[in-house]
Image (cartoon, rainbow, N blue to C red; front, top):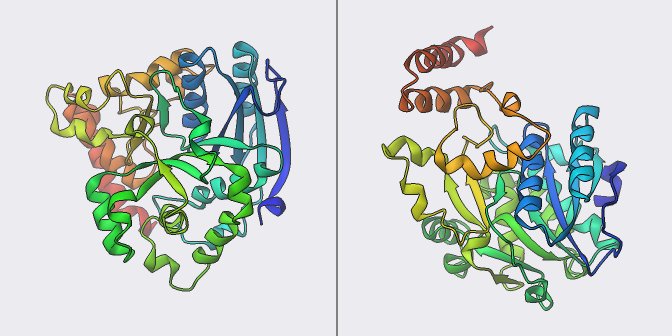
Amino acid sequence: MSNSVVINQYTLGMGNNVDIQSTCLNVIYGTDINYQFGAGISSVSLLINNPDISFRFHFFLNSISEFFLKKLESIANKYSTEFIVYELDDIELNKLPASNIWSSAMYFRLVALDYLSANYDYALYLDADVICHSELNLDINLIKNSVCGVVADDLTVRSKSGKRLELSELNNSYFNSGVMLVNLKKWHELEITQQCFSLLSQPNAKDKYKYPDQDVLNILLIDKKILLDSKFNTIYTLKNELHDKTHEKYKKIITDKVALIHYTGLTKPWHTWANYPSSQPFYIALEKSPWTYNDLKPATKMVEKKKEYKHLLKQGKLIAGLISGLQYIYVKHFGKKR
């Protein structure tokens, strides 16, 4: 499937990445239009925190605009790097389990990892809501004898997932798939992408897998992975700010040693209501990017409105919070009836 869904390819900038293998770290993003902005800022965060690393960025997208390509080209020229953008036909992927929270874009990584195995040996996959906070210092040699290097998820998530999937081995090793350092050749040899699609195509897949792509990856890679230090996928949810009057508790999680921050949850740092101290690594990269504060995303969906008004009220923006709350109530009760 991976070859058939890539229908167009655009190369932006060449930078200093002459050697296709050894001197360049390939970084993969797979997003729909809602997360492209976040992925763009994520790439800038890597560049500004790792000036001594040559990157090549691979964006797998189902919707490509001239506006977004120009932004990436601007980054490529400014930082002497390279972006390769792949346009996907996601008709078949849309048949796999998805939800209002997770679209079929979660499967773009599966396409990307198999597709790129033809030309590259290793790659770092990142979700769009992963922001680089400090130097990576990520050793590719760690996965020479494994399919991938990943970070174990939160202890509660691990234990629940092991029980849910009836695999006790996952109680300690269930990983979050938002950051994956992948041995592409081994991935392809073991047909991991094809096996994932096979499991996801089963009639009971939607009911069986709470986190579809992540669950099947954990099942298939149960004995084919190594666990990396948590600093490479430090999970933080901005929902925490609703329960922290000081907005200082994040410092216990996002320390100076953290390399990659993963902003999980519905509220992302690129949302207009998410300007907290804990979001600053995103804003630092934003200021070094071709985007501006005017590009931050307002709430458009009902689930976003629900988060927006709570955060605005927490921030003391009473009028804006009340307006957002009323909009949420209206959409909740009348939106589906129109």
